Image 1 (cartoon, rainbow, N blue to C red):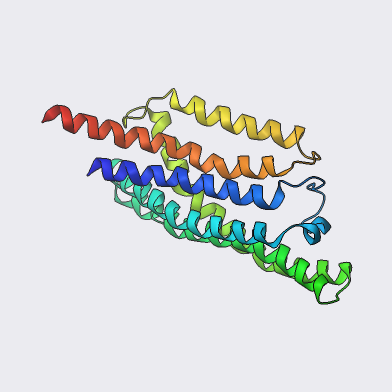
Image 2: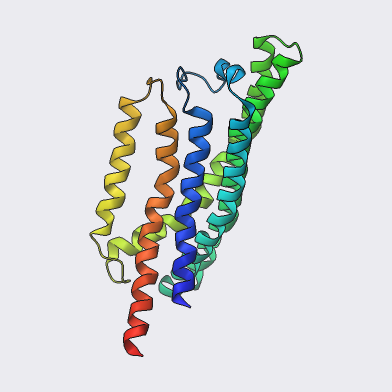
Length: 226
């Protein structure tokens, strides 16, 4: 049973990797910056990149649901029923993450590209995209809250050091968070800005490492008892 939950936690890491690949497909392109939500260079990019990002987002959201369920189970077992009820919100959070990657990684670029193809000016195409962006503002905030709630609880379990996750694992999480902060400063106007977006997506997978360790230790303990 514990090995099953460990494998589910591994799917959380796979989901984060797919989200990162989706970011690379859209934003790892020479000339893109973070100056605007609308990138005129989208008109030059191949449509397969946008569709590839869609599939990464959809599949990433599905497999991350398994990771979120694994996190919910661990939190309910160790922290109790009420924290577990809160942690279960990570499952719809994973679904919303997949949708957000579709909306931001595919809907906006394809809207811009297709509007230009139908004869709209660059300004008109950009205004169409900005409408989508305004609709996505609130769902994005809600997605982040739901997705990270159980992950923050896993970090709490790590810091406590009494739930089978070595405290030193927090060094991996903190080190990766520091790396992202440095990338924000160093790469903000770098032409390969997709590296930054992918790094942020992969942070979720970094925290699932703690969960894999938790379930692996549970499985080892049971095997020893046998």
